[in-house]
Image 1 (spheres, rainbow, N blue to C red):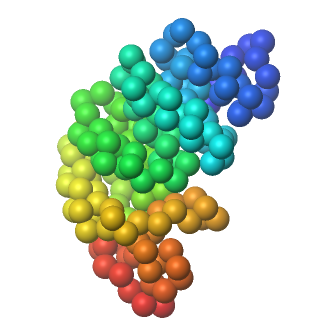
Image 2: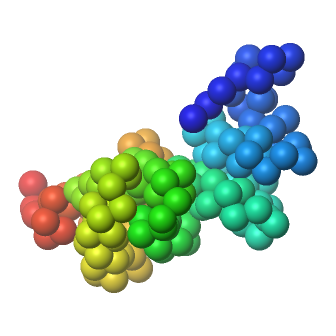
Length: 163
């Protein structure tokens, strides 16, 4: 996903900041996504500025980045993109959700059918857990309220289990 453009700084965060200023939507999307990878809580405001970008690729990259930065409001939009016919959008959604959701659900982004099935599982997970999710900055993932406080863990079947 991250590719260094000749003539730009080698630092991922610095390059991402340069990329988001580009006219080319592909480069802008790459930069926004990389703010999620290399950024921190201070990057959230910058990324949110791209949620309404004219390019759908940039908007999807912004949701991806927001999820990686601990912003739960991005998760439903990413879940919806699991059923997108466009592979790049499915891939960004699948990677972000696998990275941060803590739901024990996976999908092969190469397969539209597989991702559509995973979408149903993620929708059920979101309906059950969405309101109670807490961001664990140390683990860089979401967990249900009690799990985030170390009282239980979410198992692959979506059920909470006491340690």
